[in-house]
Image 1 (cartoon, rainbow, N blue to C red):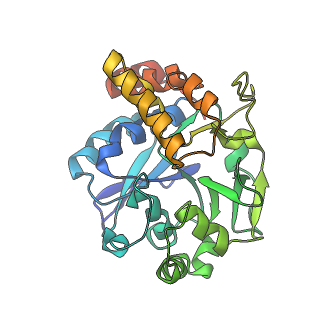
Image 2: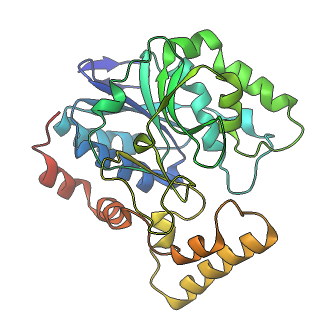
Length: 303
């Protein structure tokens, strides 16, 4: 590995895959779970974490573990003051906007961006090796909206993003918007890259609670690669054991539906699946597994 003097962090010059995430420190368990799910199938991965508050000690510790997989993670700090006055809804964190900085913070020409509410359940090679030389990005169509892509998984042609001057143009769109954009950065990216994206099969971004799932049986195709937990119903929010917490979740789901804050999904589906999500058990197993135990269990992982 060569050394990156700017951040005093290792940089893997032999990486076969560049993966970007963006999150605040309060989401470190989710970020680590995504990374573990990837490392079950891959080595030689170079991770980039765009963040404002992860301590140096966290990167040192994680890199010690990643080194066993010939992988590393790079600390990409930003100052989020740019987003202080952005109009968003309560459930949307400012971290969702950090991906605008990918072209200026990451020099690699091809990167895979993943939200932190994602779980990888199969080899990513077929996705990552997709040819995007002549397009700005590859993504999966949003399960509930026509003619737009879901921004939770983006295979990015970073050269074209630099040419597009994404950060400056994205900020301009926000400044000109009088109201909160319904889907925050996803709206902006779809404006910027209208007719400039390659549509990928659903299995590369299986949107849980999305309209394209078989909601009655709640099945996920056997060839699924990326599981993406939409809405406020996540694996970490469903894993509750007390009656009080379960009743509280039931109340919040019904209240959100009755008030009109969240009617994108049938109430019966939200209620039925308030505690059970596809791959929920796998998510919890990985999230609760220490890095020491994870390394011991997966040190023989292959490319």
